Image (cartoon, rainbow, N blue to C red):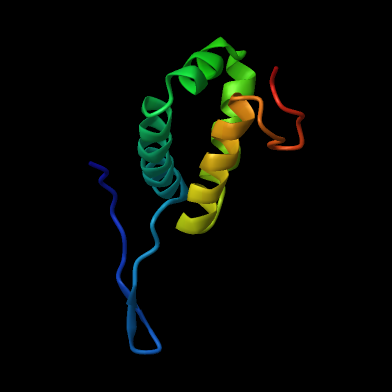
Length: 98
């Protein structure tokens, strides 16, 4: 759980609370990590390839996915990332892993 102090403002009749960027980022990364972990758990070969990547390459993939704006984009790009790990296409501007 995250805790912070905020001031409630009313903007054009709607309540507004500013949530610090650090907390929003942590929440979004946690949500994406859950979807990513589930997708990897469904594919043992992709899990093995991901584990064999350098930490910086793993971070590159996760950072790309976590910065996507919509749930549909996240889902579509997780499929692309899994295919990339299986050697079936490009992802984040890189050729497939063979």
